[in-house]
Image 1: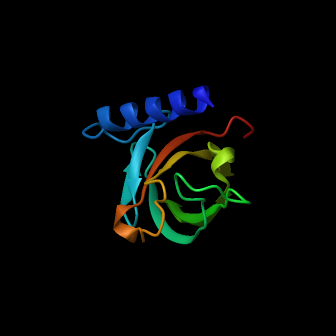
Image 2: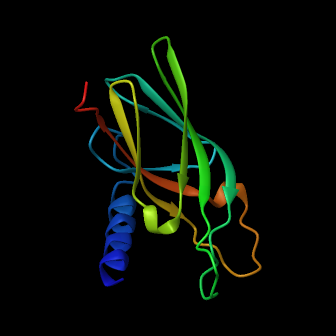
Length: 136
């Protein structure tokens, strides 16, 4: 449990420190809901496209099931385009999906759910890491 909290704090710290840096392969960055960023010189466009489900157990509540979050990223490079779907329970972060020459790792999704508080879509932020796919 302590390792998980330490990891989450590290990711938040790194995300905050990188707010003004270029988006690059191998460096985590933050993507807010609806936002599109481009990794150069790859010409890889990534958009936090859709939040399909957020049934995570709210903080401070005892739940029978930890819930899950389902979201999509739209990725484009040159003429190629794809939609990546992540389906993750909180205990499964980080989650990884590969597409073509790239692997996308969802490190952290914020904010945490609060009891009886609706989260506006604009408040969602994803810390993402994009790397070259070593299997290619």
